[in-house]
Image (cartoon, rainbow, N blue to C red):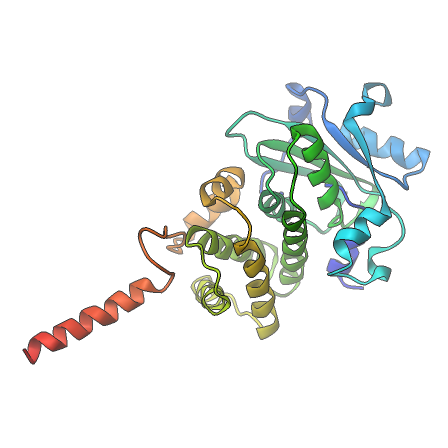
Length: 298
């Protein structure tokens, strides 16, 4: 089984900020909690300790249960049933935060899915201004925790997260995990974030244009992509292009990632008003050359 396969088979709960759990609790009201339905009493105790929440503090209207059926609902399109498994174990707590805080994630006993991977996908799903803590009763990979975080956030905010957002966010987490195995974790997070930036900012929906963005962005980042990986990212971005996402909100909610991208000087995220497509600058250069030649032959 691949790392990504393990990562996806854990239990639906739930990205680049790393939080100190003490700071999470310092100014917190009660969080909304999603607990794995298959936790036994000892595992439940361990998870609550890692989330820094006592049984006495749990409020019934702030707790939901995530089942293995929930996991299969959102993961069956990407993983085999044997990989998803038969038990929901991972758990998550979500704290509401003030505007401008962004989505911040910390993890306990999650060995594979990074905070950056979670953050990217959660922002795609539509989460805003929240602290998210993911915990497993023992060492787990944790991708399946994503849906639990989304559902807990939905309960907390009263905001309905559309199924297509959840499915696309799940696909983003899967693909980023797979990419991390071939190109490395940080490059995978940055490449997916950079391409998403361009696709959303320029409202690109054409598959051929999206593929060009993927190819050029990878070249600028000096990342060698296989044809299979290029196709996966292109398909993912096709789904993302259909969501109602705002590039400014993406950057605000996942500020750490976009600060890193800014430092790479990729010249990404051109607005539609500035250019009608990612390659408009190239077209302008050719037109300028043609005009000059026409002038010479006046």
